[in-house]
Every structure is written in structure tokens, then in C-alpha cells.
Amino acid sequence: MMTEMTVDEMNRQFKTGTVFRAEDVPMSCSPSAKDMEQTLHGVMKMNGLIIKSLEEIAGRGANAVTYRAGKKFGHEVAKYFRKNEDIEEALRELSYILHGQYTFELWKPEDKENYVVTENGETFIYLVFHDCIVRQTLRRNGMEQGGPLCQTLYGYVVGAIEEITGRRAKLEIVHTGPNACLKKLILK
Amino acid sequence: MIEISVDAAACNGCGLCVKDCPMRVYELKDGVSVPVRPENCMGCLSCHEICPAQALEHRGVYPSKRHYIDIRVCEMINRVL
Image 1 (cartoon, rainbow over the protein chains, first blue to last red):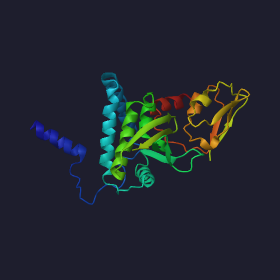
Image 2: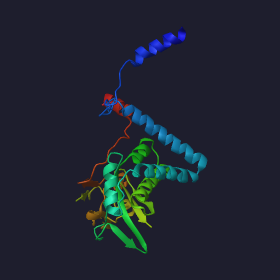
Image 3: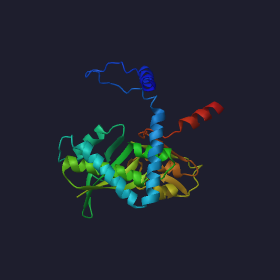
Image 4: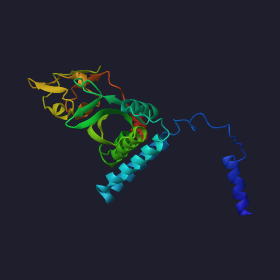
């Protein structure tokens, strides 16, 4: 009896009578993005604390764990992308798709002619990351940039690039800032 | 194109921006920081964060999203202000 009453109450509360049909896929964020603000902050706080604890317990091993997680994520996301051997085009496409999470652009110093630079037997491309959820999370929690959480981003980009172009790659941090970070994608 | 201006009266010539910038945008001239290669600036704004005199100003920088503001703290500050 008690169980039935609870179920009835739950039905009333959650309006389980609402009919969902296949074509009723929501086309916008529900509830509105404004209502999600607190949730977003909660997730950022939680992520920050997980990373902090992981670093305390696993030490430098934390970087390997987060890198691996990011790489898996990158492979997972990019397996639906069109395969492309042109690294510049692949990066532009990746930036377009990730817009809002990680907005990055190919970047070169004024004295360089091309984005793909070969120096000292190393081929690389500079990437400037503008919008980055990792940076937001770290700054929200008062944590240093360039730590294990940044490794998830390295893994993500490396995984996605490997998946799209079939080439092995490595991402190195060159500089971090409050508004953008400079990274070097080393191609193998 | 990013434009950088340095308030020469405020700059104390500590050289932190010169050391911090990976693209060697700044150089010290007569004890004041001068943006000698503004075309190499990528707009990370770490020089803003590091400058103790807050003497730097950038124009034409892509403003990244800022979600890290603590809403509750901001609400409290707004109430006080």
C-alpha cells in the first residue's frame, strides 16, 4: 500500500503520464542554459577536486591516467569524422566541431611562412587555444594550469588527430595564459 | 592585428613581461617595456596577469569565454556595491 502511494506521488511529481514520441527529440537545451549554470559550476568544482585528489594519490602517474582518458575520448569522438590526410584541414575541422568546448586556431609567428614548421628534425604546428573548458575549470578552482587536467586536452587532440589523419602526434604545452594557451602539435 | 600599448609612466621596468612572453613581444628600452613585436602576440594575456603595475593594454584580442566566476560571490559583491 505504502509502495503504491509512493509510486502515485512520484507519478504526480514527475508527470510520468507525459507521452514521449520518437520525433519529440528536444532541439534546444532543456532546462535553459541559464538554469544549468549552477550545475556547470558543480561539475567544474567536482572535476577540479577529482584531479586534485588524483594528483595527491598518484603523483606524476596522474598525468598518464588523464592523458589516456583524453586520448580515448579523442579517438571516440573523431571516429565519426571524415578521414583526411591534410593535417591543417583536419585541425580546422576539429576546431569547428569542438567550437564552444575548445576553440583553437592554427598559429604561426610572423617570420614563419607556413603553419607546418620543420625545425631541428621536428615537424610541428603551433595551436592557440582560446576557449577551453579545462582552463575554465582550473581557474574556477584556483588551480595551476599545465597540470593533469591539461593532459586530458593533450590526449584529446592527439587522439582525434591520430584518428583523422592516421599520423602519430604529440602535444606539448609552450605557454599558458588567462585568455589563451599556446601548444605545439608535434607530428611523427 | 593586436595592438599593445604600455603606460610608460606606470611601467617600473621589472622586465617580467619580457621574461614571460614566449614570442619575445616585449623588450626593455631605457628601463621601460616596449612591445617590439606586437604582430607575434597571440593574445594569451599572461603579461596582464604578471604585470605588477598593470601598465599593459591590448586591443583586438579574441576574448575567451569566462565561466569561472563564482556566481554566488559575484551576487554578494553586487549586493554590497
